[in-house]
Length: 336
Image 1 (cartoon, rainbow, N blue to C red):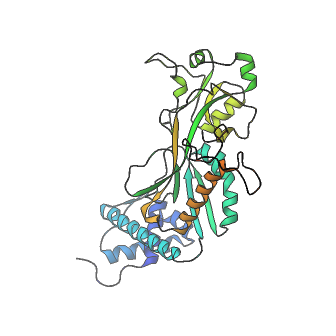
Image 2 (tube, rainbow, N blue to C red):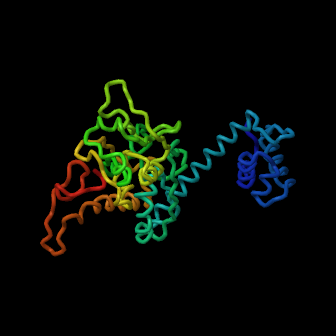
Image 3 (cartoon, helix red, strand yellow):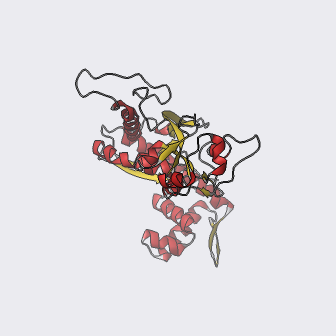
């Protein structure tokens, strides 16, 4: 039978969740700025109201009972429903405001996204942005670990909404010092004689066919041995800049290193798309809409000024079929 009376006290539930997260009454008391005895009384009162034991008490701390685990899941579900209700209330306001957590890979977030956050803040000063940079594992949007993600593969979960932002390509780069010492490859087979920097180190690559440099131009079933594996694209960039060897890098990460030389640039390189992704229950969020519209405009602006005249009769260039930006056919674009 369900307990009689109004046993659900939000303060008790808050104390319960804190105790579960902390693992002990003492640690929970510190977080809640309460005495240990006050925390213990709240849990005892909740157990009496529910007529169940929520925790096993032992010398090393606390562990949830089977009933405690079920109740904990129920409380988490209540919190999620409350969060969604508060989100709907916030969306009813006319201004885009409040916290917005954006997650993407370390390289893309550091080199492309972070420099643009200043402009986003100018447009939306009431949105408090947190940028969470992780390569693997990705943060779970459905578990509200982040609000929005920029990812580089199509999402298959139906609860997620995705919108294509841009098309990207990786190109081969080396430092002038390295090329002076080892020479410049003129065909992919020449890479057999060069020092190569690849993604690795026990972590899954963030993109499909990420290390094509190791097998392009090789006999089937054969692969080159890299001089260095780095589990971070920015680390690969730093290794190239130091003169260690050749690596496949996106143009956006080498923008601040104009001394780097592209090699084998006349050859086609693998391409991939970047997607803006968010949970379906965030579809009405004004903060998400603000970020989406801002990033789409930033992407359009990347190619709009190339070859553009400054007067009102500015020549308009066709939309590039590779990246969907407007620029001259022979213009360099960081997304190719």
